[in-house]
Length: 227
Image (cartoon, rainbow, N blue to C red):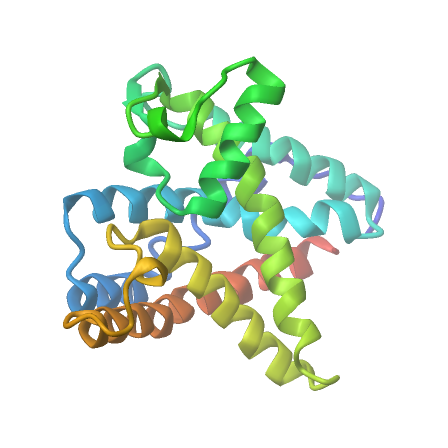
C-alpha cells in the first residue's frame, strides 16, 4: 500500500467532487431554506470551493503514509491552480465578513505580501482573486482543523458525540463566514433578534448536513488511498 504511486492531479479531481455533485442535495436544501442574498451566495460558493482543501488539510500532517501526504499537498496546489478567473480584481470585503477571519487574513497579507490593511479600509481593499483564494485557503485550513479538534474535545471521550459536535462547529464557522448580517453583534433585546437567531440556527443545522457529507466522502477517499 505504501509503495503505490499517487497522482496529485487525480487527487485534485477527487477533491473537486467531494461536495459536488455528490452533496448537491444538501447544498440545494441550504439554498431553499436559507434564501441567501446575492452577496451571501458569493460567499457560499467561495466557502464551498475551499472546503475540500480544509477538510483534507489535517491528513497532510497526520497520516503516516508520507507518499500520500506529499501527493495530497501537491494536489492542493493543483486544485488552487485550477481556480478560474484568478487574475480578476475583487473587493476583499465582499468575500470576507467574519471579524475573526478578517483579522487573520489581514495578518497574512501583511506578513506575506506587505499589504497593510486597516479595519476601515478592509471592505474596499482590492486584490487578485487568485491571491485571495490562496490566503483564505491557508486561514481556513487552520480554522477548520481547530474547529474539528474543539468539537472532539467536548465529547468526554464519546467519539460519535465528538464527531457531531465537530461538524456543528464547522457549520457554525461556515455561517459566520457567509451571512451578511452579523448575528453575534445584534442586540438580544432588539425586535429582529429572534428572527436572526432562528435563521442562524437553521443555517448551522443545514450546513452541518453538507459538512458531514464532505467529511465522510473525504474519509472514504483517504481510506481507499491508504491514509
